[in-house]
Length: 357
Ligand code: B12
Image (cartoon, rainbow, N blue to C red; front, side, top):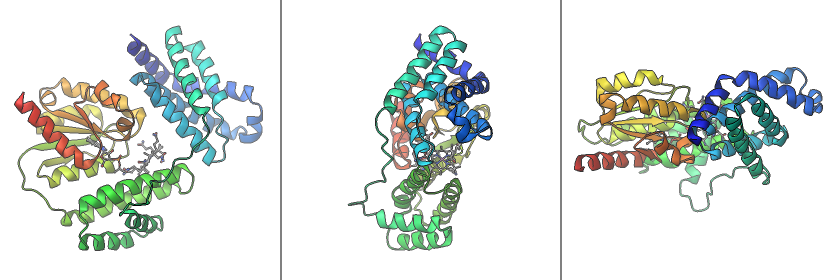
């Protein structure tokens, strides 16, 4: 019952997102006239956009019936605002949203949305704790990772290539570079962006250069003989975070799978016909942002409605699904994978279990 109310509220909020945002910002400026002094009318448009984004996350949480999705977003947003010197006081903002939704949604939907907003406001009462860098004390990869990152943040991708090539010559495997250097190193870039220590352009450069490095390293990756099983991997609509899935696809490739990587922002309607044509044993769906989880659900449902999709094991992964593990089951996937190495063994186990059943 609650699930229906959550989904209905999510749909209504998404459909009416801009109008709700305009009303909420008008109220907020009326409640806090000092905002005019701080941001002026030029800030109005940005405030509306940001409020629409917040409503989108609220809708994602309601859709998943998981207040934790919105709570995590609220803490992330507060820390982002603090790091950009924009205060980080969100309680009034959430009060305003609760009032606006209270007037514009049916009572039960408004009550549920109001509960999610209050719950998140409660979490914000805890003091700000900026995200910590990974502990490097006894981490044998820390030095290589830091050198790789320093080079990429200095826009020196050739220097980074020299570095990882000599690591390979010294006995480091490409798989280790992926999981011990690139993966945590990329997450560190995200942390630095969140803290305003690097820009979005750095994030773009480091990720583009890492994709290039991964391509350069393929010749050094040992590959098993091809065994005929197929893996199709894609990122859902609007999802630009594709490096994680590329790593997953490379691991399947090295393990002898015939691998089809469809890349970022794959329109979900286009997937079932391709799966029908390729008949893969496993379909992998990647989703980093919680606001895209509903696309995963729709895609899994569409796959289950097609003969080849019903036969395939559906694995999901990416940070949105890792952070909220209950979601994978809720959207109808067979399992959630935590990283590229375990994805292959997980897929093999799920297939073996199916054959045995
Ligand atoms: C690189 C990056 C980008 C790049 C992506 C480029 C690319 N080609 O992929 C660009 C610059 C485009 C980008 C854009 C944005 N990003 Co960004 N991004 C990142 C960053 C720094 C690294 C992501 C990454 O590659 N991680 C490394 C990979 C290897 O790890 P992974 O994705 O988790 O993948 C592993 C596992 O999860 C698993 N896995 C993944 N998929 C699958 C699938 C299957 C089937 C299986 C089994 C397993 C599996 O295996 C993978 C390999 O081991 C993260 C920081 C972070 N904490 O990750 C932020 C981050 C994800 N981005 C963030 C944000 C906010 C954005 C933007 C909204 C704004 C911005 N910063 O530019 C836009 C949104 C774009 C969109 N619509 O998707 C936030 C998200 C916060 C949130 N929870 O909502 C983060 C966390 C940064 C932060 N600290 O705030 N981003």
